[in-house]
Structure formats: structure tokens, C-alpha cells
Length: 96
Image (cartoon, rainbow, N blue to C red; front, top):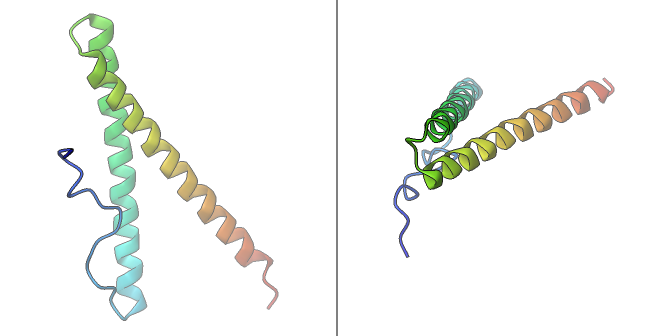
């Protein structure tokens, strides 16, 4: 069974990592920004679909899919924040 739209969905780019630290840092920041924008877009789409349902013009399946996608996006962003915060706290505990 083929599901349309999933063949191009990847979380990480498939390009080889550059050897310099600056390029890798910039690429990480860009990817993180893209992830946050995508999560925001998913939230807006879910809100729009919920409004369509409330007005009686939307499809229930589309609304549930949009809400589920928005939920997963938000959970991913929250988990990335938690992991980043844990890493920062671990670095702060290191003794120099």
C-alpha cells in the first residue's frame, strides 16, 4: 500500500556533513528553523480545519488528520527543547 506524500518527508537532509564546524552549525540552525516553521504551519492548518468543522463546511477526516499532525509536530518540538535543555544543563555541570 502506497501512501502519497511520505516518500519525500525526511527529518534530516541527505547531503554529507561539511567538515568545518561553522557550516554544520549553520545547517543545524536552518533545519531547526524549518522544523519550527513547519510545526507552526501544522498548528495553523489544524486550526483552520477545526474552524471549518465548526462552521459545518469541513471534512471530519481531514480535521482529525490535521489535528494529529499538529499534535505530533508540537510533541517533537517540545522533545527537542527538552533534550536541548538537558544537554545545556549537563554542560553546565561539567567541571573545568
